[in-house]
Amino acid sequence: MSLESIRYKRGNLEILDQLLLPLQTRYVKVQGVEDGWKVINKMQVRGAPAIAIVGCLSLAVELLKDEMDDKKVMRQEIEGKLNYLVSARPTAVNIKLAADELINLANTLSADDNVSSSEFKDRFIARIESMLAKDIEDNKAIGKFGSEAILSRLEGDRQVRILTHCNTGSLATAGYGTALGVIRSLHGSKRLEHVYCTETRPYNQGARLTAYELVHEKIPATLIVDSMVSALMHTRNITAVVVGADRVASNGDTANKIGTYQIAIVARHHDVPFYVAAPLSSIDMSLTSGDRIKIEERPDREMTHIGEHRIAAPGINCWNPSFDVTPANLITGIITEKGVFTPSRLKDEIPKYHSPIASS
Image 1 (cartoon, rainbow, N blue to C red):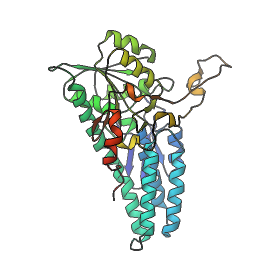
Image 2 (image 1 turned 60 degrees about the horizontal axis):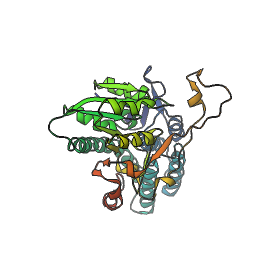
Image 3 (image 1 turned 30 degrees about the vertical axis):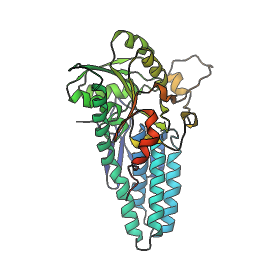
Image 4 (image 1 turned 180 degrees about the horizontal axis):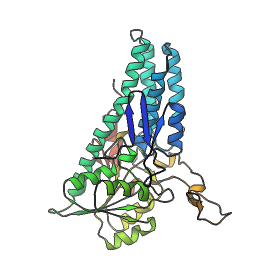
């Protein structure tokens, strides 16, 4: 059974506190938008798809408690609260796109004289709730398309060895995972020999979270520190690299966890295919290149301390960007729920598909 990072029943939202993993499993109750902003900003919940879902569900929880019956006031409140939630983690595009779509929906419902205030609220909340099931469905499609793309490059029934970075599984999504979903699909088809996951400094999402998921799923895996990637590719015959994404520009440049860019360079040197697994909601067609992606910078303490123990020399300056941008020319393919596209095809292919929450 997959790990459950988000627990939701109408009016009740809890998230698995990922700051405590792997040593402690505790769920945190999210009672409204302020709580939603805090758990996203503090990285108690993380992963671009999960950030969008939790943020929007926190608004649904708050709306269910609110007894306001003026549609125009409700629309204004929705817009303000969604824009506030977007500010919690600015690099991940999923929550921004979800917010834009939900604001459009609120505008439409508010302007329709045939829609009562109670119907407005019911339809709006139902749209948010549909994001959970849609995300799992999309992740399973990503897993299928990704595993097929990797296996299509091989001859016979050869087993594969995959390298992944950061955490992209059930803990980063509503369930199943993006890059880890591809790995899960390969494992299910009996073609995965081994997966290697990086430690992913400085926040250790690989060591704390991906390793936790791989052990939980009984997938054969080995943890490496970030600086071992070159040696790994030189000695272990890696079949492919599969990573996630927080934002993909229209030209294919991809922002992902810091350290992704250097893995892509090493993969190119060793002629290892490098794939990005991401739902359409992570692709920002308004950005022409990765140079325009805003990169979040995190507190120095994430580098200087492990828990309460200081590991860096006092007084040293720190630079702690949470993400880097991998140029499109280093990416073999971008795996989405609609198929695998080379970066050069995104501009032609992605506009054909509707946003996951765009239609009524």
